[in-house]
Image (cartoon, rainbow over all chains, first blue to last red):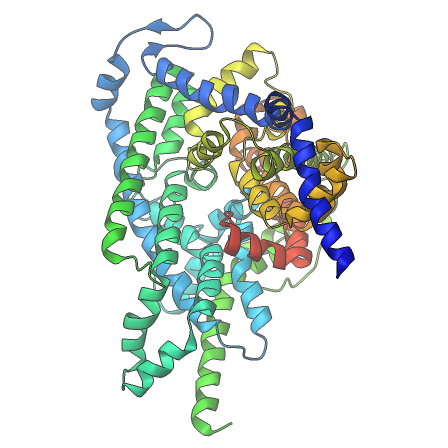
Length: 311
Length: 280
């Protein structure tokens, strides 16, 4: 007892001595030494680059000669650019379909995986796996061949007497190949939902059962409200990452056919690194930032009405 | 178990088997196709090859291969490992400072780091490319590796801050009383305790870099420096039509490292996703 007290007092005294030894200047210097790698990165690679993008957006720049200031020309050109509008249309369509479908698939499957039945570990692993592999070039190549005119998808449909379309060659179906690929990778959202579902107190379901609520009612009045913060998180992250999709477009459709999958980031890439029109691409990047900011704030503002935070 | 709950469990199994089938079929199809002779791949609906061949794997390596994937795997591996090292370096140092040290304007910096989490890389990639181009570093691995040492992935720093905050402060105070410098305290007390977070972060850093395509596509144009992602993409455009087997074989081989990570570190992955919001 006594020794403990002695220890406690020395513990209290010593840090004060230490504080005296380290002046605020020294303390700051130490801390800055620790964060210096991050600080350099933030100044040059993040903040500096962002400001430079804003500057470039008002210039004409091809990497070879110095940037020339052209005012808002890039933006007026973008406004009149048919490809820009095609890319906006296809990207929004892709986001509007793939994000909700992914959310629904991940939530429903997470509910199936909640109960500890035999082999549950294997089911969880197998269903999660595509989300891990799906972003790679390798799987994108496989996906492309899967939807080939003679590929297994069409052979499968043929069993039922359905003549499958030329999925990737047809402007009205190509985008669905990409959407299905996005939905197929619902695993990471599912993992988040699964963790959330485990947190829902079972007492709520018991109370609802006693009150005579059906399973469906329980889903809408217990599960969904309790999960709403997670749905919000998944919706926000899913929307932003759906806007960024690139690898799959590059490998599977190349933006075609007939610009039907000319997604925004792919079009931006083309302008920057195929045509080396850096100013124009920078302007597109600025617009992308604005679009994402608007959509994120919209999701955030509406969340007041449907996200339940008094859990 | 009564009859009703048995029926329910059976239904659950049936649904889960159906879902699992759709999830693994594309991967299994690629896997088995890589062992089929080229003329069998699209002519049969059988999943399992009639005749097994390992030719597609063997013919993709060595100087006689139409495209030698050996160096590509080596480069992808090298870049991923260096990025892991760089991410550990920058995120532990910064995470520790944010979690433990007092300085101005600490709060502002932390807020700033959070703000950049959602920043699309497209907004910064053009100037970054211009910088590396001016430094004559385009067509080298530097632009792919260097940024990780400068903490460009805020998610990793956030992960470290969260974890280090959870380490009891008594431990570092005790170390300081023993006369440790702040840096020694960081290396001898904090780093060993932060190992679980470092492992999680390393897994994500490796797997994101291994799967990366966009960065590699921008910075590497010389086929001699191609990584696996770029090699596959070029293979598909140049030779793919006649050599599906090799294309599938290399595609499957390209996902093996991620699959191995999945086998050994599944818990780290799911925890990283579920509790730290890392993108799976």
